[in-house]
Length: 68
Length: 529
Image 1: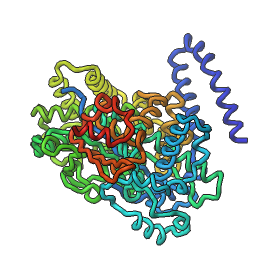
Image 2 (image 1 turned 90 degrees about the vertical axis):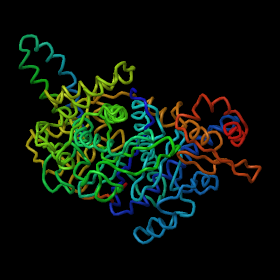
Image 3 (image 1 turned 135 degrees about the vertical axis):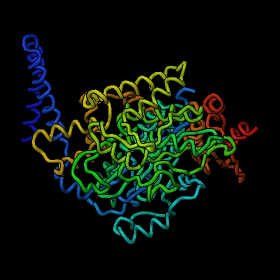
Image 4 (image 1 turned 180 degrees about the vertical axis):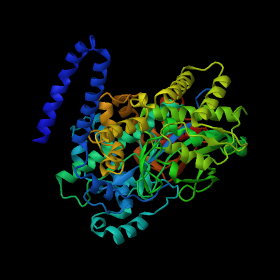
């Protein structure tokens, strides 16, 4: 379910830039900032979809021996 | 002059079996090396079959891990170069620490050291699988064949995953990470190698390298969550490696690590050459970070050879290295021996200016590195975050800042997990690869170029002969090393050796016309003649 929601969000956001670029003509500065914010959110959503399920266990378990 | 120089990259991958976190890392590393060794040999065998118009079986369907690695022919890949651990050592260690894995493995036939079709070496270095790139003649090629190692690592992980999913395998899924620390106090290396003339003054070399090594991380750092060797303090720093360096010069690489390593094995004619073994760098995934690492280093070595390096003497190079890594403003001052002070950016600018002055008529490759160096320093000075699409540490930091703005603390395990996962070699899982796929991080080479470099050696160094020997006469190679090769004709007992003291020799121009010969010893006769 979560994944479906994410995909839906991604699809929505991919159609957003067109509208935003039209708005930019009149309110350039504000819209650029808005763009950046939503862009960062989009990336974080993509990254969240990839992350190991339990960050704490993953980090704790990742134990290496020294090398070289 | 110029950036052209014989160079190579070594990567020790972090190795982790998520379902068996306590699995013996040496066993896992041997499994990794053997899996790829088996994979490429099956593909070679399939090519030969295809040439004979036999049925076209899919080589991957036969991937069965160790079951194929047992064939005697594979033992020809073991070099005569002494290994750190014998297969018996590994078996003993495996049985004591991971007996339930070891029983299914024929340890006598385990390949600890594999020479690859692209001329690289893939082997077990204590507790990590290590890829040593083939010798390349310039920084761009070095970046490409280093990325080829990551591609090979990713194919290996995918093959293991496939085997684990389809049959009763005794071995778990294994993931590989191109990073340099587990965040708990352990570090493993990504080393650079550069060929130098024998007569270079080592003292002058060291003096010129220390300020350069203390500060180049502002371009070549891979970024790290946690401050201090074991991440004792929460936060973000520029370099994976900086906190693990404790002194300026020395021979060791694993304890009391020195910024300048004095190991002196040229792997080439020892009358003519010296090899500079650089251990202080981070493992880079971003192509631009890596091009800057190899490119600027080559230019600095030109400065040193010409006696034209800037004279900058830091009061304490080791603590300067730590300071620079911990300072995300890039404004921290570094005390000089004469009482003054400077910054990382100023030191890098001094080297850049000296290199510009020395390289009066730069060729295209040299101009590319000089311009990139200058542009990156300008951007770092004015707006470091503008390099989120270019450099490893800024890409990682910028991503983390997104989460910090959402309210996460630097001590949150999610950020530590992102740090590790940035370096996961799997294209579908690694965050570096994800950022590239999203168009957020620029590359210099595309996937098809990298795949090509994983299968083929550079054409302009002796790696060409090494790689082609493996693919043309795999069963005749008795030993393969950086500067020696030995082959045996299957119809004879005589061993034929070839010394390759000149890394630029035995290249495609020399070797390629003879690859149609029936046996490798015939080629050696021509090359030795």
